Length: 131
Image (cartoon, rainbow, N blue to C red; front, side, top):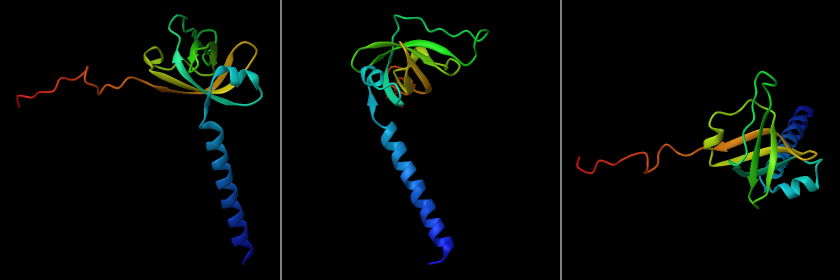
């Protein structure tokens, strides 16, 4: 084999290993208790917005920080500091996936994915059966 073939083969193998490792580490959702038990590790925490608590976002103080509370799958409520501006539709979201680390008393999220209510459901559209 030529030297370039060996280098390319090693490069592809390394990229595949990195891809598999990243999917394996972020695909499983945990609760806040697991995240706070190991604060050095980045976790994915899924849940819903705790509507009993206010969403705090003040762009005059810090444009890259949004604070809110999330109820995880086990029912525990925890304060979240999202390192981004307040996402549009946060209050209407059906579920939220956070990626980040547990800190002293709160969860520091660097990424967030929201599932918003579908605009294509039976409540929003009436079917015309007379046509």
